Length: 329
View (cartoon, rainbow, N blue to C red):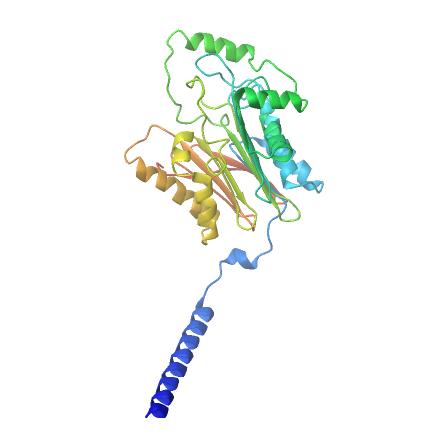
């Protein structure tokens, strides 16, 4: 009896194993791989939020010469930090309501190393200070006076970040002291940049002076790893622009990279990221968010709340400014 029971159970086990194997085989045969998985990767490539063509041109110069993605994104966004006509990044950025120009930036490399500075004053290139934080300290974020002192110790020079234009604008603003967020300012906003070098390695950087006339001490998403920027060298990278508080609440850039890990394209992931924010802000139309993403294959995508957001892309195929779809079309 025991022998017959053993043989019966063995037969059921074998039948079950064969059925499972056949089903698994069928699933494998019917699985459709995305077309991009069979195509050669696009590399090198650099992308950035908004139409900052000089920034991507500089990043491409580094990449085309065989430089690293990390060097490319740092050098690329430094172009905007130095451009005093860009009044939301670096020198010439608009001040907070107390009249202080405060800068935020972060950077992240292929190995997941990252550095950030927040509420940094008197230093024109916060992204380079952020890189020093990453490479020269055991920390990730330095803030305020501590970040400023560290910058001086690393050889950065003290500068007046006000320009004649931003000083006049601030004096005019003080007459009413009205605070409001601007939904969209084409070509003049936070710059987030992502790049893939010839080795296929990914890096990213993000830099801003934040909201004009913000409450002193306010920090948005731009210098926060996972919110304004996130890179995973196995998957891709993402960066954000717009009202940082809403990006922080969903850890937006990390979310988009994880969605790509789960199989979404950069475009699909950016769309889902914005839709999750809007689900928490149903009916609101008074703010702008824009996401930009790139995957390991070099495919890119972007999506925003209101029309107007664009991203600049530079690869061997050319140098283009891409208009993206929006939640409120």
